[in-house]
Amino acid sequence: MAARPVRLAQAKRSKYRAVKETVDGITFASKAEARRYAELKLLEKAGEIFDLRVQPEYDLCAWQNGNAPVVGKYRADFSYLDVRTKCGVVEDVKGFKTPLYRWKKKHVEVQYGITIREIR
Image 1 (tube, helix red, strand yellow):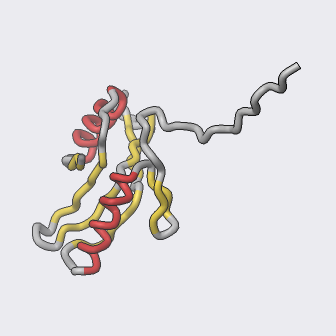
Image 2 (cartoon, rainbow, N blue to C red):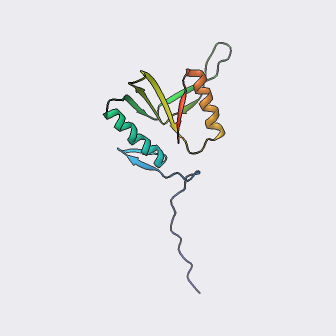
Image 3 (cartoon, helix red, strand yellow):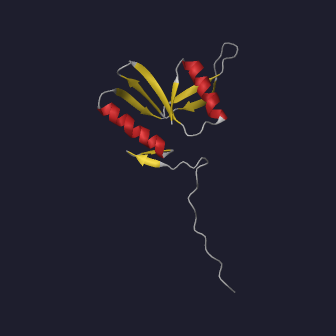
């Protein structure tokens, strides 16, 4: 009887085919996100931005009868302060926008009065 071929375990693929990448000991969900991080680190080193944060979280609240319970969280890819404009910036690197992402983005923008910059 012939031996059955042995299948080696395959690495689990991302739903949207993103390939994880590690930079400075931080694992990013995609190569595009890691590339943007490298760009932002250069801008920070040049003094154009400061207070770079990776994956900052924002609580999503739903106001009801004077209460605002936290009903979820939104995790952006980056946030930083732009020296030139003196404004805070929140960025999300996106290859594909899911309906859930679109809803959370809109919720955060309304709740916090910010605009999320999408990077492709």
